[in-house]
Length: 309
Image (cartoon, rainbow, N blue to C red):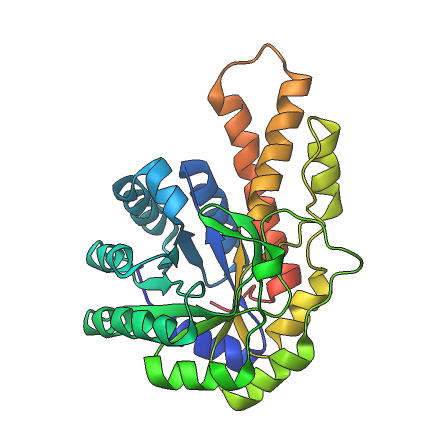
């Protein structure tokens, strides 16, 4: 078992017409639930850490928890920085042993995004680390990402080609209609598959990434709402749309909100049924199981990556 890059993982996913899940982690129980599911599903695995997770749990703790998960499970794992906002945080994660980093320069003009991304790529590649970047802007809120719908922009296919060629980036997060966080679509959610097809044709064999692809099953939202305050939105992208995207060059799909809702639903239910309980193990244990079940569902029924390790 080892920390690995996503290069070979994405090559297999592209050729096999499936996507690999990149699951956000914040604490021990979340990591345990994800890794247990990956082991049972015999699935490739990316664990990713956001800026918020680094502040909350401390990057040293998170790295050691991932190392413990590898040792216990025997799995190879990609350790990825999600939404790195500047060169310094990307460099720090590379130096800390991450095998993949994302530099998110999508808020900058095109040329500035290229300049920043190229700087990260040059440093990361010199250390054997792969780089994801983003072109286009997703609406929504998640950790440090906060983009108003009025400022969201879809990815231009021709710009995507130029961006990849000039930066040397290893994968590209594109905007085709997904949104960060738990949210409600106005009307039926739609992904721009025509745009995705155009990008794939212009960048054959190149791994694309979807952020903001929340597709939490309705029963988890209903469970959250039944045992507490209403979850704001959580309509999500229909799972069949994500399965279709995975067959069209999308090799990595980020999964975070779904995990939060599964964990929250489990904990809310526990305290309604056990209001006098105060042992964290009693409610975090079922929460861990809820995470595991959600991840297994994603791998088996949405991503198509079960038995692809």
